[in-house]
Every structure is written in C-alpha cells, then in structure tokens.
Amino acid sequence: MSGFETRIEDAAVQWREANRILKSYVDHKLLDNTLIVSYENLVKNTKVVLNGVLNFCNLNNKNYNYPKFITDNNEKQIARLSAYEIDTITKVSPPMLTHFGYDILS
Image (tube, rainbow, N blue to C red):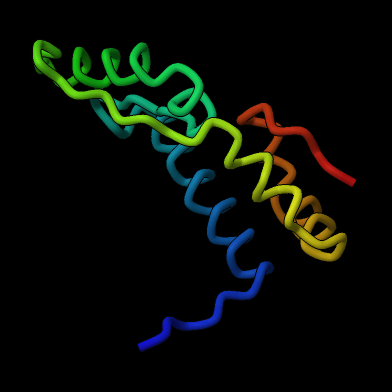
C-alpha cells in the first residue's frame, strides 16, 4: 500500500504553519514546560541534546543508550531538491526558515 502523494507546496505550508503555531504558543506562554530541539542540533550534538531532553523530563541518563544519527543527511536531502522545489520552499516558508536560522536558498 502506498501513501498519498505530497506536493512540495503542501509540505512547505504544513511545515511553516506547524512551526508558526508552536512558536506563537511559546511566545504567548500558552505551553508550560516546552523544549524545542532542532534536527540539526540533535544529529550534531546528540549526547548533549538528549541529556538536555532527559533532564528537562526529569529522567536519569544513567545506562541510556544514545542513538547514532547520519550527520550529513540534511545536506544530502537538500542537494536532491530541484530548483523548483527550492524556489517553492523559499517562497512559502521564509518567516520560519529565518526564525530557525536556516539559509534562504536560491
């Protein structure tokens, strides 16, 4: 069984809106106990980030098995994007791309 096809426009809008809503909840203090973890930081600083998550959740990191991530996966996925896809993402998502420190590609 295959999934539904997702257009790049739909994916970019969904990413932008999900992050916009989360940011507004945090900005307006509508969520208690919120920790935001970026994918890039998680894969580059796995142990530090996960220790922060465990500490945030009041969990002990003793005997915790840290996963290993492919650290250059994001770069590989970006390199696979077509010019049209990059253009679409940069037209749809600039506020959140900027908020999270992503480069606006052209």
